[in-house]
Image 1 (cartoon, rainbow, N blue to C red):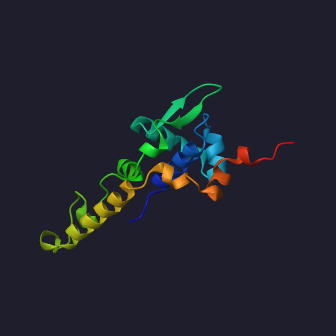
Image 2 (cartoon, rainbow, N blue to C red):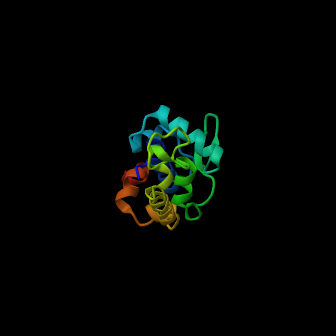
Length: 150
């Protein structure tokens, strides 16, 4: 299964927010730390806000934060919300399929089961588990905390 660019960006954004729960974070700092285009990031922020994964605050001191604790946010939930029921093969789509095997093909069921197993495995992983005690990741996602005091 291939993860879309949107889901990849969403997970980086959510991990950044989870690593910085003590404050609002900005799109600019996420884009810089995670090497994401601010235009793409803005679209994902909007979508995650509408889906209830992040809260946004406009204005001069605005930014975003997680809408609920990272230990309550499941990676599978995020993937399902963003990826949706994506057909794994062209014959799974609602479009006209020219494959003569479609009506009797068992591959469709095997792939559907595999996709559900993929999501079920991700349901076991919380956003918190991705960042907790992951010092190499936290040093990237919390650059302001890595500076030594003068």
